[in-house]
Amino acid sequence: MSLDLANSLLTLLATAAAMGLSLYSTLAVPGLLAYLNLLALPDPLAGLAAPHVWSALLTLALVEGGVARFRLADLIWNVLHTLARPLAALLFVSAALPRAPASVQWMAAACGALFALAVHVYVLAVHTASRTAGPRPQRRGFTLIQLAGGAVLSTLAQLAPPIAAASAAALILAPLPWLPRLWGAASLATRSLASALARAGRTASWEHGPESLPRWARRALQDDLGTPLVPLRSAPVTLGRIGTDWPYYRGRLIMPHGRQPIFIHHRGFRPRLLRLPQAEGSADQRALVETVWIEAATPYAICLAPDSPPASAVLAALSGRS
Image (cartoon, rainbow, N blue to C red; front, side, top):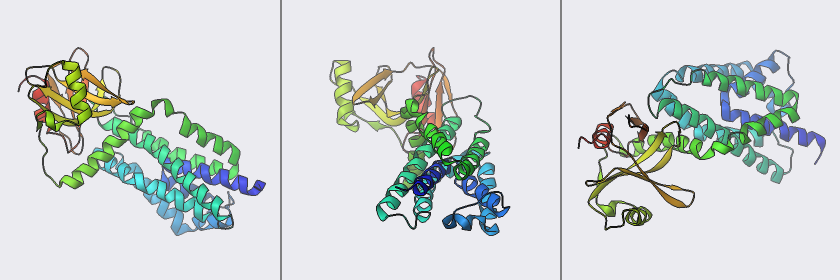
């Protein structure tokens, strides 16, 4: 592999990672700088310097910043970009390597899409966590960090490819210790939008009887109780918060008749059961993702997608009123 091709790959892959932060500022700022003769773009990317291209991208970046002010629009925008950012990265990298061998071109394009998706999952998780899982201040200013980070990283990729590649690697690898909870938060928003579209306004309700549980959950519950399963009702939910932890576990809330509520989920390859205390709480009853907050000795929050019962019903069950 020639040195020029290696530098091109570092530039493109760093830019692809930046597109996971913000597709529009990542492409707009290098295009604007090239138009002002402050930056030289390679020939395959010279089209970004066209005024109608970078001005349209800047407009979309401003729209992205404005959308972040509104909860529902912010969630939907970021879920939809789960497809847009990786796909744009794939097309961007493949189009920028017209003279490279086909195997290198498509391998680089696949890596670019993967890098953009990894960074986007982190971004979507932060947006989801700031909008769900109980009363707390929102993380304001994060969208501005995204827009600025994408612009800086993509510009650095043109000026100093090795430094940009190292920065992109840090951006992808640093959050890995928190990957399970980040994935849980990101999948909550994605699943909620898909469920809302699939259900088309239909309201979900409790599922009754042990047969409503998956087989692994029935076995784990019976082993834990040590008796035949009693009458129960259950629902798919996400445990967004417990105490000071924000796990975003996807599982099922089980209400056995005359017993303490149980949350059951897979952690690793084993089912885990967590008994939830009943106490007074509140429900935000907001669009797309509802959150039930229970003020127990160890407070916890249950996040509900459209395939879960209404927040009022879950709150009544967890507060012992039904």
